[in-house]
Length: 461
Image 1 (cartoon, one colour):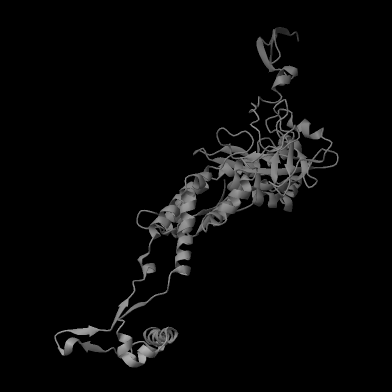
Image 2 (cartoon, rainbow, N blue to C red; image 1 turned 180 degrees about the vertical axis):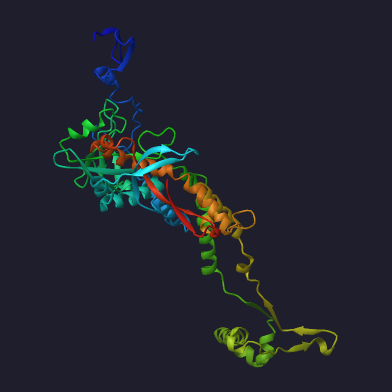
């Protein structure tokens, strides 16, 4: 059969078969299908160094102005009764069930996927590895708190397999400053930031993969080290090294300060406010009347103070002792000038208003709490927040279920980056060649109404 070539290029070959009277279009598999040398790594703009922190090509890039942003955020957030538990709930929702490997083999009439579980021993061993399960929990927590995570991928000795993923605490990690090519080559790991000196002996360095590299698989196989960092994050605008969590607005807006001030103020008020129940207004002439003028005048100032304290102790015991509740006290009147039209009131007992019962600043605390929930991306009804008629008072079963379902649909912003190293391992280990369209997803628990016969059902998400 003769073949006539009509067109040939780096990307497409077109041939004509005279006997069959047909043309054949064939995508080229030559070097033209590969990116150019300049495109192996996308452009990475570099910012000018503004000073501060360590200097030199091997210096880490500060995280925050004082290189202690994660430490300060964790410390401040941990003082609040809402934030840590809310983050814990969101972390639990992201990792509610196992990660499932599957293929999409078709679609139903309603465009829903027809999936088939991939039951491969090697993939199952990888997914069931304890280190990988720990990575999912700990990595999720880092993404929720800091929007940055630093999973370390551990290779086999022959560099042919990714064996498992180790979690590196994000608060302990700092990127090395970009080199002249705009690449971040290393991640510095130290538990003592910001009190770390240049070339600190406690610093551990790991190679850093640029996930945008076209040759990211070959890059890892050629390393002399047996592991490397595959950085993941929740992208935010204008950030090149470290992403800024959107919930940081809790701090910059002042709502975190307000929410912390309310309980601090109430604590101080309870500790420092005099526990006054009664104000006893005593006429100075009462003491002469009580003890006799001649005897009272003979007492020294110290003796007079002692007599007053003795009297006050007796009155306090009478007015406040629980076992004497309901008893009466007696005070005397003295008629002025011997006339019964007007009398001298020696003692007046006034009940002191308990300002703690006024609920001062409760509304301010509730408003601050509501704004915290908004910034954290959690519908307050999920956690049972009862903040008044206009701030999450609706917390019935239906409200919780709908809020739960809405949040479940938004969790992929955390799950996608978490599973990115899984997809890299699948490509590295040859699983995507063995199983085209291999996918990984979390299995979710969906809340249902009781009239369905079950309170929950499991789905892939």
